[in-house]
Length: 280
Image (cartoon, rainbow, N blue to C red; front, side, top):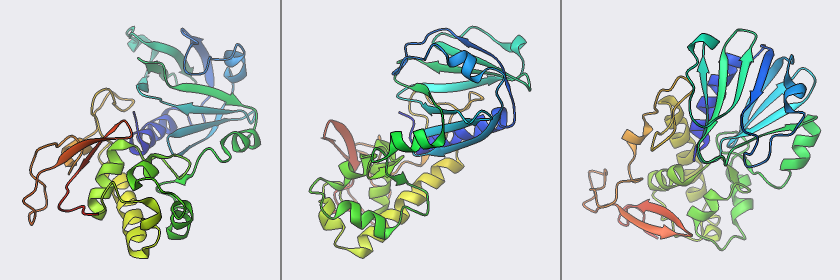
């Protein structure tokens, strides 16, 4: 699943292709995504201009000049591809929607597993109402600070790794970057969240590690594990910088450590860690 860095890259790609441009045409080939594409989808956005694009957590928000907002989530395998003219279009399997913009760029939404979605809200107020209490602050925003995280963790009896994956606590962190951030912070993925909250040093270290890892991943285009590529079809490179993720039984990258990376199942997901560098 694309996490915050990958979604940020796609958001930047969409900004380049869509911002201040008008939807000249929209074709829907399959309306059965996670949420069914509404019948008025085409008429709602055709001939409308894109006036703003932003990302919060793993969501992309595209605001039109009629105040409608497209909310996009890529799910497990969703992505966009761009072609600079319609003449370049080659039929690609799993293309569900095609947009032709006023700059004559063609944007295709592709989703193999169809867990992603594009839904329309009539206003920012409706968006805020929908996401209220569903989504924590963005993991690289200034709002993600010590006071905020302590308040979120202080009554949580779950492992810190599971807490970081809870989008109601912090938005945008997924399995890859939770493992990498905890390793950088030297925090065991099994440590209780409420215990972390009692240590200002651990909280500060965790926040700085999360932000560092996410921003570092953005710089190199995110992580390509299986399907993810940017809108130009280019892979990310952060997977070559992994310290723990997908490195089971390999030596720890810490030159002062002689341990090997371990992998366990934690609440149904793979967790990678070094039990020497990340002691409880």
